[in-house]
Image (tube, rainbow, N blue to C red; front, side):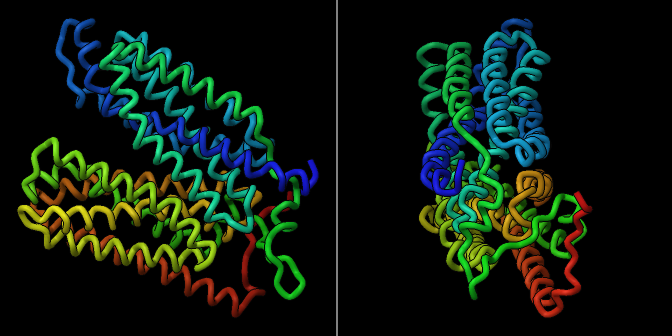
Amino acid sequence: MSFTEFLQVRKKLLAAFCLINFTTGALYVWSILAGPLALKLGAVAGTSYTSADLAPIFGIASGLTPFLMIAGGIVNDRFGPKWVIGAGGVALLVGYALASFADSMTELTVAYGVLVGIGTGLVNGCTINTAVKYFPERRGFAGGLVTASLGIGAATLPFVVQFAIDGFGIDAALLGLSLFSGVVIVPLAMMTRPAPEGFAEAVTPRHNGQATHVVSKNWRGMIATPTFWPLGLFFMTSATLGLMLLSNAAGLAQEQIGLTAAAAASAVSIISIANTAGRFVSGTVSDRLGRVPTLLATLTVALCGLFCLGNAGTGDTTLFFTGLACVGLCFGAFIGIYPGLVADEYGPAHNSVNFSILMIGYSVGGMAGPYLMKAGGGALQDVYFTAAGVALFGFLCAFVYLALKRREKRSPALSFTGNRPH
């Protein structure tokens, strides 16, 4: 396909990626599925299971995601997105279907924990990174839109799944997710294709008569650069900060400002909506203002949000929800901007693998956040001070990165590509 033909169809392909990613948001309806599944397994086994007993299954699915993003990224960078996304769609179709027939913890772990985790990882990594390659001149917009689609799916599909469970039962709901995943993802995957070779250089805006682009580094070259560690730690801080509060938003709303359990559920909705909005809006803004300046701006917003949370007392609903929204906006911004930032820094050719490696650090931060929340021992002010400390560490990482970039510009001859000949 020629550059001109690809320019004409890439918007349609981007829309396909958005719909595919919306579908994978079904992974995050686990909290809706866990209760009915616990009752079902308990009835079969003649014992009592709770949602908490099934929690490790979701942990396996979530934990597999970044590693499958790396594996899929290797195939995607070499052969394109079609078969990676298609294989992910088949894994989701089979995983949800087997989960509907699972009668034991082992069967459910294999079906949901392993197969659904594999499918989600393959699809998410491929759609996000290929979208960034399609729009080298608007990487923030493309990455933000596709990641926001995942957030929209995660926010809306729980209502559909709950309706299906109430009307038809847990087995039918899982079969519905199976058909939904297969019917949407697999056919759309067959439509996708890799960006033509040299596409980024051809469409990137020109300065002084020359196209501006960076030499692409593979994962070895990326890790060898001085900028890798501050960028990785910067990404990790956002996950730590966001999931400290996202994982406990409803509990904080009840404990801190005195909401009922039903009303406190709106805290989860607010931070999720802000998270989704942050992915798209900040990605688009970063195309104009720059990636790191936009991230620093959203991190400042998060600090303001922590100040609001720290000063919210019983009945201060507006102040509390404003604080949650600020943190959620920052959390989403990092997810929306980082695919484009990694492509800007290390080139687009190996972006699928490079971004997926950084996602491992993000996952580590995601595990650290809830742990730090628990380590606070129930003292809310300590929790917010800790979160503010994490945000300040993020500023430090960003300033180290910017200092290294200034040094690199002053001494371009000392920059290291890190790639082996190939």
